[in-house]
Length: 180
Image (cartoon, rainbow, N blue to C red; front, top):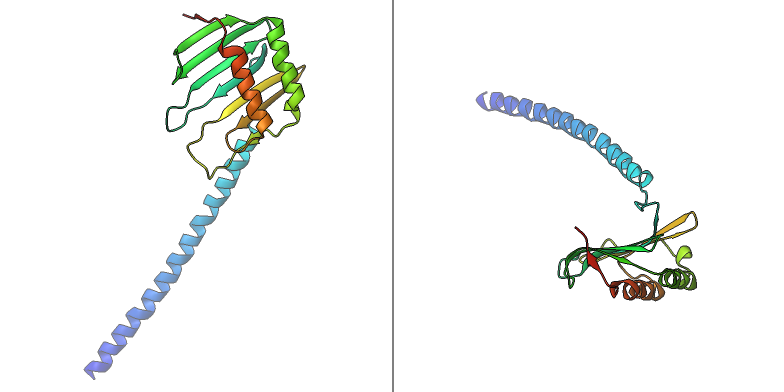
């Protein structure tokens, strides 16, 4: 008789625990769905808000971004009046903000080279998110009312890399004066 009573008590607890476990599973499932929807909404919002931050009076800009090592970090911006601003952040010969004046011929050489490589027809992004520790080169050009920005971090076309090098060579060797 005692054994029968103990067996009934054990069975009643076993059935009760199964009902509680089922109820807990349902609650967990209800909590996961809203999180998934929120993430999708955030991703969509990021895509919609993407714009190019480029001054109205700028013609060209090249930006070299950091890596985990000692990659040069700087930005060169060329304005339509020929003013060139060099913001040298790290791992460059001189750090600081510098200014120079480019002649029309130098600017025209850059824009002609851009047309030659089909800059405005290239993709906007060359990247692979699975590859880390590579610096990006972000090049932005204005042609009439069109602004084109290309982010080149991974496996961009060779002509783009050569254009970026050309951009650097044209403007990095200028006579710079430090800005206050």
